[in-house]
Image 1 (cartoon, rainbow, N blue to C red):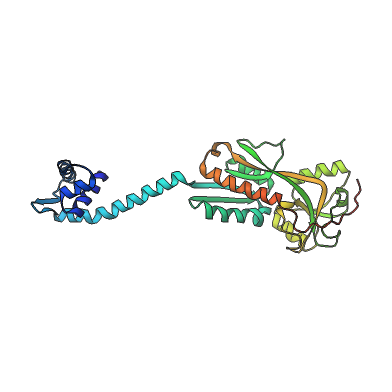
Image 2: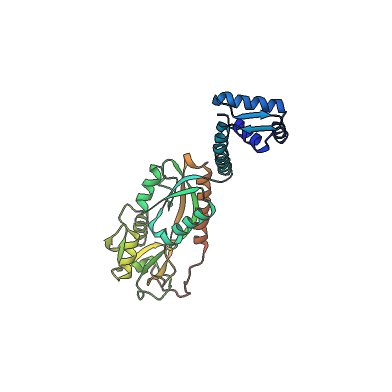
Length: 310
């Protein structure tokens, strides 16, 4: 059925006259009459009774009018939604983020996308570094990992987010609160670190070799939340980028930035999805969140410093 004919039929019924309806539709009365005859032929039934007083619906015409109005209203809503989709990003976007970003990036990102991009549906994965790289290579739209120029991710290009300091954290007392420490001062500390295939672990191994420090790794744990819980219980210390941590003292842990030790963060976007308006919109908000977090000054880094071996 031609929806334009159906709309004209409704206008004729509302006007009660082919002449008045033709004026409102900006067409001639004979042309509108031909359109109504065409609709009747399509439906193989008489819809209108014409007289000198105007037109009235037959029983079939009244039933068609009863269904036509909500049908045209629905079509109008669908068209409006499609027009809105042209103007606003829409669709599913998959994002993978470090588990340590849960409070500081992931939750704010979800809230921001729901508020600003109501037609976008997020699919979120939280994992450790190795799993994140595998997920991006397997087809996740956007992922944030520590950037290593020597470890490209096939099919995805990096967007640099900025540099981040590495921080030792654990129960208070090992060093003055907020003090900056040297890498050599990790010597002898019981460390809880991710397993060897994690980029942070590889970074620490290179730093340890450069400084001639043998790290005392008492546990390997590939869950960020468990590492934090173990550190809070006093089972050991750990090292992580500053962006991944809550403000010092907020979770019962103290933080000590490690002088001269840092990492770079990057957001990787799938090459095949880069032009998607929804992916671009989520990427923009994610990168803005990460860069703002990286630019924020440490919440309570004191001026105290601890003399450290070279």
